Image 1 (tube, rainbow, N blue to C red):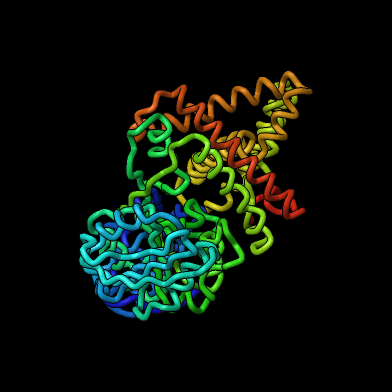
Image 2 (cartoon, helix red, strand yellow; image 1 turned 90 degrees about the vertical axis):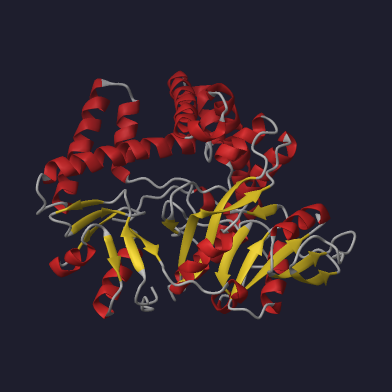
Length: 466
């Protein structure tokens, strides 16, 4: 990782999901989860969970907390919005462009017309105070090439990429800009919400479960974390960092945003997801277009697997979780006994990790239970999403598999509905049906992409490293 010093006045706040033990000297949390041991002096600096950088020592502690994922930034310094150029890649969406420009006030905007049938024209009385420059590709080259053209044409320190089908909400830019007071941050992304969440049942599902909406919790972006990438529909980036990496990969027409995030991470840059900033997206709510888009997203895993071997995996659970789940699924006495022995063995190993803490056995049992049930949920999701063709095939040959698969498909859908019940307004039956169709579409694209690439890299399950 880069070791850019955090400026004085920069603050970090311990994530509310992190648990502190031994007087704050041991922190457990982050994504992926880890145990962080702090020196007494460092623990004292944190105090009630907030640390402000006031010198070299506190800057080192704050950086360690951020890079470990147990704390979130609270910057106080704000770069000027005048240092931002908005880049809009466009292909045949003049109506969306007009709507977007009307929402932007006083920005420098570069519109890259990527081979639209009718060249873009910006009328003088367009209802916006933006300063707009139009670049045109005579033939369509793809969104990655369009974004790169705008990136090369920009001269400001920061660039914001906004697709023509989005509308930023008030304060979106200022909320994200503060993160760049950390000199190690290359990219920040807002939460993408629905522009029209109520037009039909599918719109209500997308409002709850859009592939572009990464949720309400702020997070660092890590390839193996809870937020593993951020979509390119709306991004704010440090221009120098993107130019160092050559921008977006123009040979990729899907998942180019994931590839960029992972290349920046590998180069030592830091990335943030900031859900306090909102950008509304005009979701596809016609079933055919919606299903096709989900399938299209699935095809992106194969090219990612070629570029980032070992990082793209549809299922990553510890080996002991897989073994215990398999033994319990046999529904036999010996299977039950074997599953319990597996969990006890895992508990003994985990207890050694927490050695030195008070009630280490109890703490280990709590985290073991959380990990096991989280692993079961990931297994159920993978059976219904990434590996659904194998699941359906196995159902034809085994009544037991059929019973387990149907139970897990329903349980996974209902559990997901319960988790998001406050935001969508859909009843559990229709929600579960759309969830299963969503998974079928993505899984179909995943297998189609693997077939085209003649590679199983994007299909291989993995076990996380210790």
